[in-house]
View 1 (cartoon, rainbow, N blue to C red):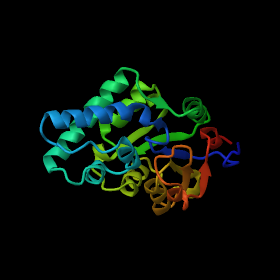
View 2: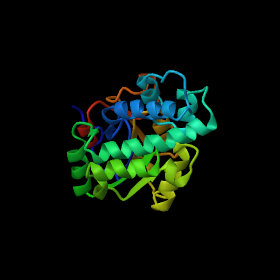
View 3: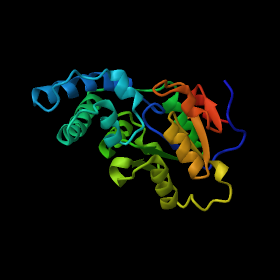
View 4: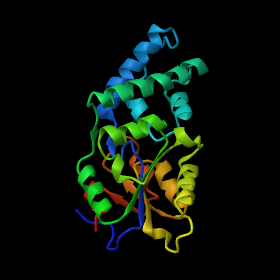
Length: 227
């Protein structure tokens, strides 16, 4: 295992799904329940798409996600899918379902102890992002939990830009001291277009390996964020 830097970062911004949270440990059952309910309510009568298709779309804003997962659906079905997804995710989290990736908790705690400012920037719904942090008992480690659902941003680039502005990080002299850590191309893009360091998480496997090709660095173990 190789550490990615020799100097302490000022701040680290994390994606949630596929970076901190091993989403399929929650989403497989949620996916089954969502499409079962849509069928029972007569909103989506086609065969449920494979859960792998949903997992592959993690990182997208939800409207784009549902258009990709069920392109033949109605607006009503997609809006109801949003509601059901959140409801079943929160129920699962409250029941103790879902897991953080290996070494996430202790690494976040160590970064926090070392004085690094920690944030989350996710394209998910507000209650989901905050729910994962709360039920996995890591919420107290972050200075901000940002989501597209809360701020109605159209892209991860815009969400990270807002986070940087809100916390006075957009004017720091050394932008390489701010890291964007995530597993999808949207995370790499958010880092690059905001002039901060983009670190790709190669351990998740929800997206294609090529998505991380533009990252400044890649990690295969979460502990590599320590120096």
